[in-house]
Length: 79
Image (cartoon, rainbow, N blue to C red; front, side, top):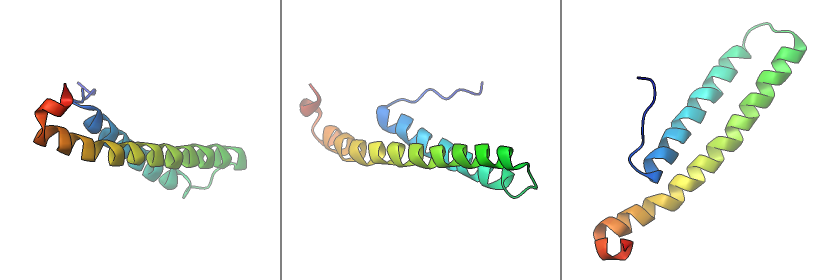
């Protein structure tokens, strides 16, 4: 019930974008608490990883979006 099955690669990449935005917000919230230095360092690294993943997912969305629009307009091009 918690899994969302994407219907396309574009939708999967868009889901990835949202997941990473949510992860970044979660780690930013965690980092507002008084934490031991090692825990804060781990949360910081995890947030930074999510930033990198967000960039990768967004790049994929940017690559796929024009392709899907072109493929929809020209269904023969998909064959």
